[in-house]
Every structure is written in C-alpha cells, then in structure tokens.
Length: 506
Image (cartoon, rainbow, N blue to C red; front, side, top):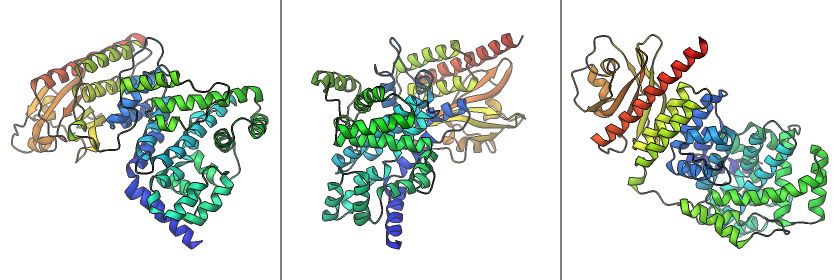
C-alpha cells in the first residue's frame, strides 16, 4: 500500500509541477468562476483572451454552422458568451485546453484513444442530464470529461513506464473498466481513477467529480450520469449495436425515467455530434475514433466538407512546437477593430448593458484589435485617493509588478493625478519628471504607454491604459490613433449607459 501511495504521489507531483502545470492553472481558471454572473463572464473572457490560440479557435467554433445563428458573425469572446451562453463557451474553452495540453508528445495515438473516449463520455453524460432535466448538465459534462484526466495524462508520458509494462497497460484499453483497474494497479501501483481523483483535488477542478470518484460517498444523480456516460461510450466503441447496448439503454431509461426508444436514437446522434465537435475543435484524428451509427455511416463527402470548413479557418491539428516570438503577442487587425466597434454598438442596444460589460469589449478591442500587450480598465476608489485596476487583459502572463494601483494626489502635475483631469488621451513617451511622480511611470515601462481618462458627465471615474512593455515593441502614432478610437467609444458608451439609467429611473 505504501508503495502504491508513493507511486501515485510521484506521478501527481510530476504532472502538477513539471509536465502539466499550465493546463492545471488554465483548467482551474475556466472552471472555477465566481457566483456573480456578470463577473464570471468577464473572468472567463479574460482567461480565454490570455491564450491567443484558444481565442482564435473558440471564435472559429462560435462562427461555425454548428453554433452560430444564421447571418450572425461573432467577433469577440465577450460577444460569444452573450450569443452562445456562458456554459457553452466554458465547455468549449475547457475542451480546447484539454486538446492543446494533452494531445502532445510521441504517443499521440494512445492519447487520442483516451481523448476520444473522454469527449464521447462527456457528451453522452451531458445529453442524459438534459433528457432527465438535471439542473447542472454543464457541470456533468465537465466532470465526465475530467474523469478521464488520469488516463490521458499517463498516456502522454508512457515513456516513463518500461516497455513490457507499458504494453500490458495498452493491451487493456478495450477491456471493461474493472478488468483494467487490476492491470493498472499491477503496472503503475495505483488505478488511473485514483490519479484522476488526486489531480482533481490538487488542482481544485470539479466538486461533482470528487464525489463521483469517492468510493465511500453515496451515489447521487450527477455521479450516476457520469457513470452512465462512461458506460455508453465504452459499449458504443467496443461492442457497438447489440444486446448489451440495448440492456444498458433500458437500465438507464428506467433509472432516469426517460423513453428507451428516444434514448437509443439519442446516443448515436450524440456520437456523431461528438465527432463533429472534435473536428471543429481541430482534432480530426480524435474524431475518427468516435463510433458512428451502423445505420448511417459517416459520409466521406460530409467528412471532407466538415474538415474543409475547419481548414478554411485554420490548421486542423494543434501545433505542438513553440510559436515564433512574433506570434506570442497580439498583432492588431484593422478589420477586427471595425468588427469589434460594431459589437460595441450591439452590446449597447441589446438588453441592459452594464459598464463592466461595455469595458470588457473595449479591452478586447484594444488588446486584439490594436495589438497591445497589456490593457487595463482602472477605476478611482470611492474616496478618489487611488486608481486601481478593475479588469485587464495581459499577454503571456506578463502581469504588473507591483500591481496596477496608484495614489492620486491633489496638485501633482504629472502622472495619473494630472492625466485624470484632462479630457483627451495621452501618449507618454518616457519623459520622467522628478520623484515622486516618476515612480509611477517607472512601474509602468518607464513611461512608454497610452492613457485615456474616462469621464461620465462631468466626473472622472477612471481610465483606460495600454502598453507594449512585455514584448518591447515600440508604440507609434497609428497605434495611438487606434487607441484613441476605442477610448472615445468607451466614453460614449458609458455616457449612453448613464443616460439610459437616468431615463429609466425618472
């Protein structure tokens, strides 16, 4: 037992500290959002936007025929959350993170097998949750997908296992889970579900999965759905149509009080949807491992069309090589700027937009559209003594050190105290005055930045800040004009929101 615990601890530490720390952090950020709906959406958008590859692929998915309403073009992550829904964008973001982080290394075929089962199980469990009117179908999807985390992680690092033992492990892939656990314990010293449980706990991912993997916990509805999803995916892949599948469907139907005929039709539809989604996510090799209904085999023409749609937008298979230095930073795009400005107009005209929702779109416009490394929406504290970051987008994890928080002093002729009294944006080009004001600018790239004060009526409420400090790329007049355009949109939008509030309350 001690050896098993030691082996389990060794693997979990290796994956957490050396092999998959980025995935652990990203997954936790995507899953663990705050309870406030507006804040959760903003936090999710920022998490996605920090990864340019994830941003691009999420927007490709959002604009695919599978998700986008006809005639609709989604240009920003913030808009995708509004149009597709928070849960859908969260699930897609986590799915992209799983593929990008785990489908790597020399054993991609083995990882693909585990990944195909994981995604198929998750979508089957999600469908069962929807059919049975479970209140947290998206949580069930996440928990089921992550229930295969240990297997996918070990498949990434099969070279750490001896040849003979590795082959024994691979030979069990088509066997029932109970038979596999015995071999896993013999080869690894622990079951893969135990590794999943440890990683899930250490990375603080899914409470639903924690309960499902706890052998001492009573079985609840979510745990049952996770188990049913895994069972369906296993049988569909390894047994296909037949008496065993019919028996399982009947058992699930009775358990969840749904029609067995409807469920039988649904499980094959879900299998096809899983394959389609994986292709759109850029993993066609994984999609090909998902089973399809014998009655309607996949059409080569349909497959080609689906792959062509993805290929038209970007390469289908994730690139595991480090990106070239020039691609690590937002590059800016004039067409995207105009598209985001249209999104800003739609945001203001639809529903009851808030200042935070508006500024999230503005931040994305400056970050992706203008191509800045760090963009901050900062607000004055109620006593107007400090300017603090309210929300920000920062490339490549290049956070401010110290944090973006500055004192405001009456009578100061330089720095934020002075700029907040102006009405026009400022381009600071490194002219440092005597201390103490220069300390402010040394903390912000030595004074090379853009700053626009934001006013509502006759009152300054904060400002919009942007720089290219992490990449060291120069600022220029064209960038400044583009920055000013978004600052103007922000001021107009904030004024519009206030005016609408006044009219509504009068």
